[in-house]
Image: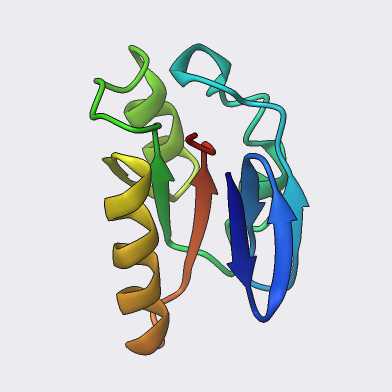
Length: 106
């Protein structure tokens, strides 16, 4: 899957930060860890909400992830990737401080 972000095409999973978009190695929910989200955590001062697209269908977040992100000042919004893309766009339109972590789907 590819994403069009700010007019640019990105292949595969991505992290969308307030100032840039990065390739992300996560391919499934097992790849979503605080370590894999390190660039988002570094941007926590400019992003208060993290929208995670966990793939083609909803799966529960890894145990402890929500609490770990909350301890670092981020609210986790977890949903399937399609819903995450739509939610992220709405948050941006509302000028909300957010980031996204999107697992690509086929």
